[in-house]
Length: 88
Image (cartoon, rainbow, N blue to C red; front, side):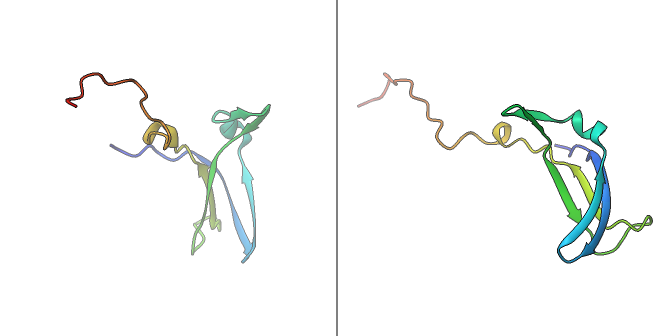
């Protein structure tokens, strides 16, 4: 299966070992938002690069569209249908 292209939401700069600044495109992010308890959320991935790119940015923010439930069955999802064709 071919990987989907990443949805770029923003970029930024690492300012220190524990601080970075960035901007996120709300218009692009909103298209991938979901609602939980009446609030909108977007799952993102933040990547910090060793070297800045041609624009001086060393932080990349992309959409994290990994869907755990569609890939693996839930751990406690057992089929409780009775089986009558057992040989014992």
